[in-house]
Image (cartoon, rainbow, N blue to C red):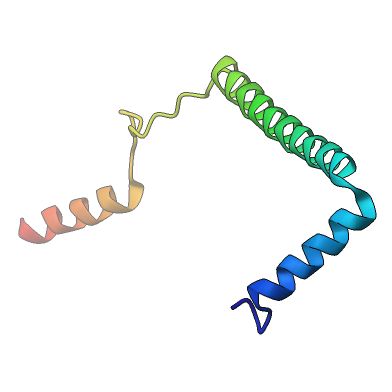
Length: 88
């Protein structure tokens, strides 16, 4: 049961649609709809391929997480000097 609609009611509606439009017209509509869905899938797939190619072709920046060797912390040096003087 689909929300209170029985299978018999669906068959009656389908029968009326077939009588109004005919089987040939319904077949054409179905094939057109299938072609549209297939074209949409192909377009999405091609767009994904293009995005992947652009990602691979673009050079990526290299980031180094190492600190420079010649860093100097003035505050730490000042504290170390003060401690050394206190010890003397």
